[in-house]
Length: 134
Ligand SMILES: [Zn+2]
Ligand SMILES: [Zn+2]
Image (cartoon, rainbow, N blue to C red; front, side, top):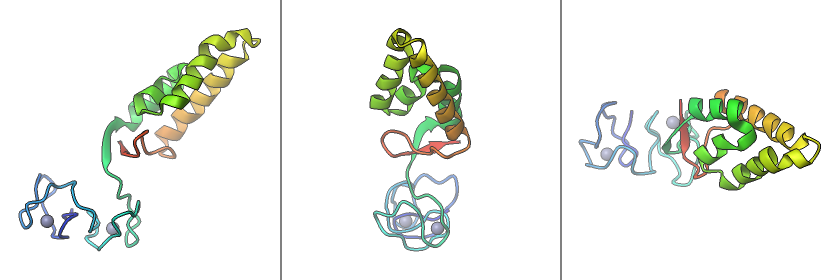
């Protein structure tokens, strides 16, 4: 990988760049995958197409499984930090029983679909915009 601050190639396991002393994840000037210069606000590298989003601590797998099994309660969205969506789902999943059992069915299918989208990588950021881990 390459230092995001100075573009020097660095060891995969190094925590800081030996050339500029910058933290591995800090800096926005270079692509960590191909070492080309990047725009500070770009989400993807224009040279290699890889994501430049900072990797968050949330797991794609955990979120996906939570969505599939507990999606009707919005647990996966609470986990990812999509709080508004999570509250809508938990309201549908619980209070929704009053609506001819439709609420839990709607939120269950919604959660299931989001769980699958998470597992196949269609949803790949958490509520803060950090990339999900594999
Ligand atoms: Zn550096
Ligand atoms: Zn790149």
